Image (cartoon, rainbow, N blue to C red):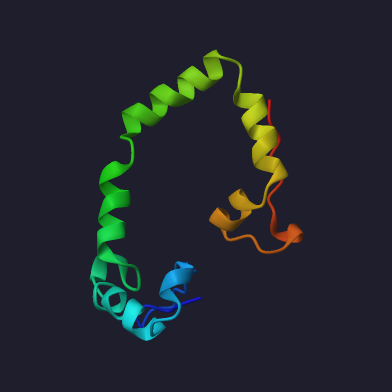
Amino acid sequence: MVKLCADSGRVFRCDIMEYLTADDVVEILSPLTFISEDPRCFGYPIPLFLAHHFSRPSDAMLLYYHDKVKEKGLMDLLRLEEMACSFPDEIRGVKHAFEREWVEYE
């Protein structure tokens, strides 16, 4: 786990290839700390932020995908998959089961 900016509350998992672990880890992470102080994404490397920002689909494309998923009858399967994993909870900031909001699906 690394914190790329001292003033940020964000901490990230940073996987370093095994062949690089013989080197000084601080030397490897130093360039990342330098590019993690942009106000748009304080504590996160700006090149990664921009890559995520510009590669995401437009709202129109997301709606198109949503309609296609419904059309193919996959929505119920995806909702079951969503309920079976903790990823949606992490996105919503839920850490404990009692914090979940009950959602009834059609």
